[in-house]
Amino acid sequence: MIKVTVYQNQNDVIYGFCMEGHAGFAEYGSDIVCSAVSALVINTMNSIDKFTDDKFDESVHQKDDVVSFVIVSKPVSTSAELLLKSLVLGLCAIQSEYGKKYIRIKIKRKQEV
Image 1 (cartoon, helix red, strand yellow):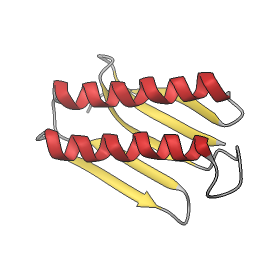
Image 2: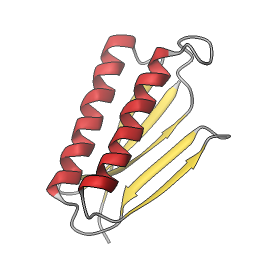
Image 3: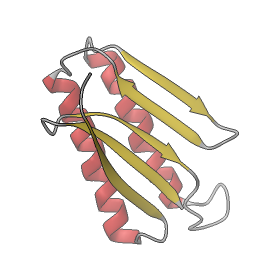
Image 4: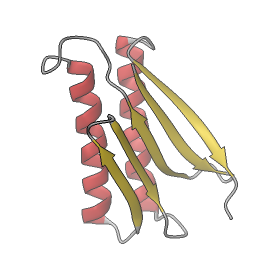
């Protein structure tokens, strides 16, 4: 199962996410759920990098199947927030279509320091 944690501040602004695991929908290389989630995540990260001035920390651990992405610049730009909202919309659509057996999304609210 893919587990996605979406980070949101007290003002409901999404500022990052962590994704881990594999969907297990099909064999490696044929898993359309993993492919769809990966495409959304990679495109979101690349889009924020290319189209915004936001600074972020990212880590990709292919061996452990973990991707982490957190915007560290304050405030999060409206463009980056829109891209992250779009990511969540797409992930929720995948979860709705294929079920929580393959992907689970949770929102983690955190006070800004």
